[in-house]
Amino acid sequence: MTFKNQMEKAIKEYLTPLGFKYNAKKYAYIRYFNEDLTQSISYADENHYRKHYYFLRTSATVTSNLLNIILYEVTDGLMDYRGGRESPAYLNTLDGKEVIHTEFMGERPMEENIADFDRMYKKEVLQVFDKFKTTKDVFLCPLREEFFNPYNRPYVRYYVPIALFFNSEFDKAFEYIQERLDIEYKMIERFGPHESATQTINIYEAIRKNLKQWIAKQRQFRIDDEYLPHF
Image (cartoon, rainbow, N blue to C red; front, side, top):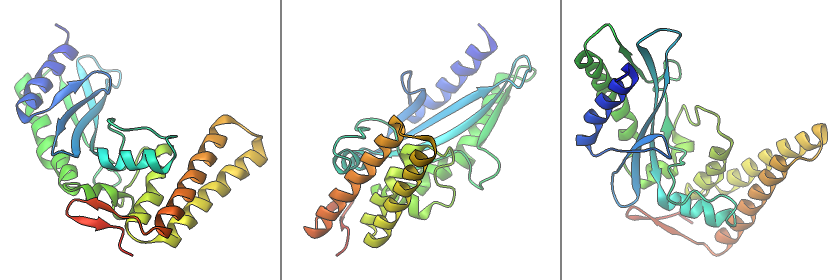
């Protein structure tokens, strides 16, 4: 058994009793927190050109399936993350600087390596999970989390106008959409039309159209024990 295999076995043995199950397609350990929220842990293993050594750059994510259902509807089906683990509520750092991480070293017993993993989980990963214990926490993450979207993933930006809508900041939601559209139009003007920009424009246009309709109808959604947005 290679050192990497030993490490993966030790991690699995640590996380399984906590309710996590490894999903090979999503490269993450996932567990259900409640009927709507799932928690997941993923990591990138880096050997830094050292033998029998891995630096695990770790991320913790909390996903709301309800939010992804709403994202699907508000984008006219252009963004379909229903049943996935995509979310605005994910962090790989708690201070914006040092990433959440642990190290596995071949020169020390596996018990000591997993003890360091235990430290990371209890001190840092659980902090992320504690930030997003309710569906509303996940919905409003883009407005409340200082280190939002640490990997700068383009799709995560689509959650921002939705968060503003649910926080009853309607004008800001449309301002944000226009800002993103202006960026895409400038890119097209500079580099010419391309599929990515066209898709992004179509998504934001769909969000704008549907949010306007929802606001006109004063549509609300039940989030936890509350009906949002407030009109």
